[in-house]
Amino acid sequence: MTTTRNNNSLGETKGEQWDSQVYIHVGLHRTGTTFLQREVFPNLQTTQYLDNLDVNYWLRRLVSEEDSAYEASAYEDYFTTAVDSRPSLISYEGLSGEPFLMYVNQTRNADRLAAIFPNATIILGIRRQDTLLLSLYLLFIMHGGSMSLSAFLGYNKGKFSKRISLYGRRVNLPMFEFGHIADLYEDRFPGRVRFLVSEHMSRDISGYVRNLCNILGEHEIPDFRTGVRNQAYGYYQYLLARLLNPLASSFMNPDGLIPAVGLPGRVRHPMNHLLRHDAVNRLFSSWPKNRIRMPKKMSLEIMEHYSASNAALDEKWGLGLQELGYIPGGSETQVNAVAAPGA
Image (tube, rainbow, N blue to C red):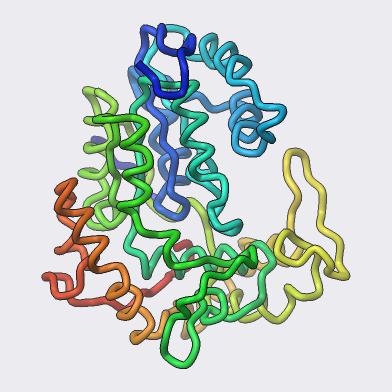
C-alpha cells in the first residue's frame, strides 16, 4: 500500500426542512465503492461520513422492508438526528438495487430516497460493462455460485440470448443500461446527479479523488492509501471455487452440504473464507497464471451491445466515455476484459 496526499413528487416530508446538504453514494456495485468507503470517506474534512452500526441497520432496512411495513417518517426521524446540521455523506451500494436479484428493488429504493432526502445529491459510480460484468461474475463465484461465465451472462454459441431470464442469482444485460439508471435518479433528484467513472480511478487516482471532493465541496484532498481494498479471487482460487461451491451452503447455493459459518453481523461462506486467506493468496500469487480473462469476442460483443446507450449517456452528461472504451471505435482500442486479483 502507498499513501497519497492530495417540492417533492412523493409528498411533503420533514427532510425538506433540513438545513444541511446530504450526499448519497448509491454504488453501483464493483465500481470502487470499498476503496472509497475505507480510504476516502472517513478522512473527509468537512463532510461527515455516516457509517456505524445504526446507520447500516437503517440502510439495509430501507432496501429490504416490505411496502406494508414501510413508513418514511421513521427514516426521516432517524436521519434528521444523524445528519445534525452538517454536510453528510451516506454510502451504500445496495441502494442502487441488488444485481443478483435482477435489480427488482432499484426503482423502489430511488422512490424511498426521494421521499426521505428530497434535496439530496446522488453520486453514481459506473464502470465499463465488460469489466463490470466480469467482476460481478467473480463476486457471484465468491458468494457460492458455480455456473460458467457464459451461463451467468446468457451467452450461448457466440450470441447473447434475447430472452430475459427471471431466474435470480444471475444477470440480464438490460440491467446495465447506465442511461436508464441515471434517468431514474435525475427524475427524482433533478440537477443533482453526479458521476464517478471508475476507469478514471485506475488512470489517475488522485484526480479521481479530487473530482469526488469537488462534488462534496471539500477544499482539501484527504490522505488515502492506494491498492486493492476488496480482494477477489485469482485464477486458481476461481477454479477451486467453481469445483467446491456446489458442496457448501451459501446465498447462491442454499442446499449445500457444508453449512455456512455464522459470524457477528454476517454469514460467511466457508469456501470463500478459505480461498481468500492471506496464505492462499501468497501461494497462488507465485504461480504463472493469476489473471482471469473474458473471451475477447464476448467482451467485444458486450461493448457493441451497450454502444448506443453509452453514446447517448455520454452525449447527455459529457463524461468522456469514448476514450475509455465505452463506445467501440474510440481511442481506447483494448476491449478484452481482464480481472486481476481484487477486481
